[in-house]
Image (cartoon, rainbow, N blue to C red; front, side):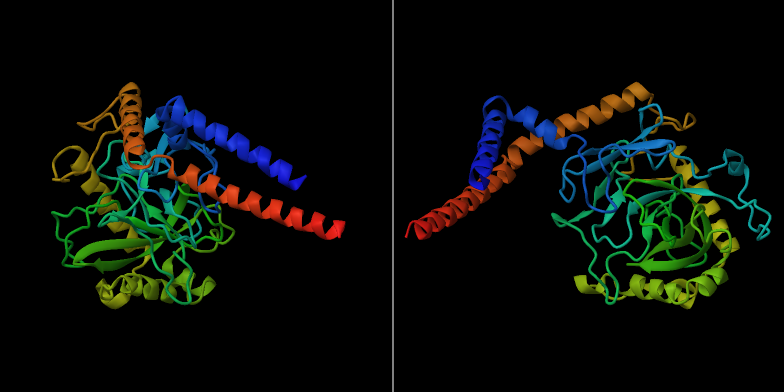
Length: 376
């Protein structure tokens, strides 16, 4: 029975592969590049339901073709970099207050885009230089990038991501660090208990910040916690992190200092002698990077190859309407299908077929041996 079922499965798989190669690889490649469910913890399951935003996967996870596009609640493509607001309360955009009472319920709440779920290793990032700014895996020298496990840690030790509508200007020297920005949105380390999902938009409050000097560039890391975390009601500033999460900040410094060493690079350095700054300081830095982003989309600052196409930010000088953004993503998909046909001609399917043939041979041999022994 097992052999018959396996043989039937193999025949169906072979027929499907034949259909793909005979009736048009374009369709098969399109299916490969469309949204698909994934069972890996911390990664998307096709269309990820959120309160306001959805994501749509193109390409296979852990491949150079992988892209995660964002849509609003109406199913329209948007840019996570430019269209998702920095502030959960749009009224906060007028001014970021530097200090808030710890218990007055008026915390400043930000949207965070999760790029790397906790305990994963793939270096995912918002593709600032691509239209509509999907999330992709970083590639260096033709190879997909992964962070090494820094003993005793596994992968990233927080949910890692970025604040939308912020930008660390490479043409501006930060007075606090003496270095220019790294040309990316400001980074966030979310320390809540929940392992988040790639592409998830999480409401967070800032607790503090540390200034990383990464290969001579300013790379601020905001320490934040999700507002729906059980500890959020009692953690309001960086000192509260030390109280309720002892050792976490020290582990963060250790990880950030050493995470590039396995790749043959020197240890990273920090501003302020590796000291975390408090919430008020963090809010000032966030406000500054938000103003830099405004200058970017108004073309008052040089973003180089950064793409600032947006669907919602109506005052952006590179604004697209929803129809244009859909056409833009669809055209990118067409290019990806062509590239897939040229570079990856169903290697995965052939590998599966070879494995199944070997597997069925083993089962048949095993059953033949059993029947022979029984006959004797």
